[in-house]
Image (cartoon, helix red, strand yellow):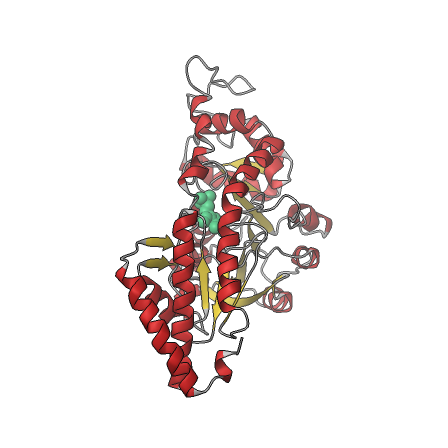
Length: 427
Ligand code: PMP
């Protein structure tokens, strides 16, 4: 197949005519498909329905220390929930606090607390002239919205297949005391599906921050979300590495069961050093009398332990894998060799990341929308919604049915081709 950029104007005009016709045909179908958010599909949610029954009838609603989970008490999580989420986070139960239904909420609160009260006795960020955060890009739009909300200056750090560009990270963190944090999705990253290499994790652990209150926001949202049994990524456990490097306090590790059980009705947790967790608890005891212990109990009784979680995740993978494979096969078949796009092939997580030719992403997303396919807004994967190259598009294949997804992927590749041809004709 000839690359589009090597084609003559006549060849490109012929292609455009053909694609315009195909586009009009598809548009006339009046599709309404959504590849925008990483939501589990209804059949994935069905996998956890039995959880709704485990506390039914005359079930014993006491946790293992005898506390009645129907009442107030036990502020930082029932012991069995700490054990379960501790296993999922690869830390000891004493290094974990169980929260409510959303890890994003905990991340927001952590920034809010640092802003208003400071980190472990350090100056609250609101009293500083400048606070900066490093943002590996492309990244998760909701992370960026939190730091933007607090007026924190965000600095783009390019992602590689090994994780963020660590030369840049080290330079900023070790030299600039205004740099207070970095957003990381270290496993099956959102949106590229990359997993940080061992060397990257070790370099994180060995940072020498100029700011005493610098923290790594290690959002391990996809820790057990593999697509394949025999082709899984491995991520080095960071708390342990930081402790070994003499940096026990530089990391907060977030997790939740949102895409294990029910998004919005799962359980969230933070793992960190004792000193950090004491800081979290000080705020938490003012904020709430306790989180939803019945939900914690429900999760523990349903999943039991890490093996139960892994078995459950295999069922998710069986539903998700064909969807990823379908989208990837369509991209491979329709776009390989044309020089108009590149995409990732993740082993887990919820997304595929697509990079178009420069200056085309917004137009591709708009064109797809015109044909009835909603994609994540172009630019969303960058701080302030500004992708400097206007090229990254996040593809979320989980929610549509396989049939719908086949159609949506077809529309997407057509839009990529059409917009790329139009771009080349502009020149
Ligand atoms: N972090 C990342 C990287 C995510 O992709 C998501 C969900 N899309 C979340 C956090 C949200 O997690 P929660 O439901 O626990 O707030």
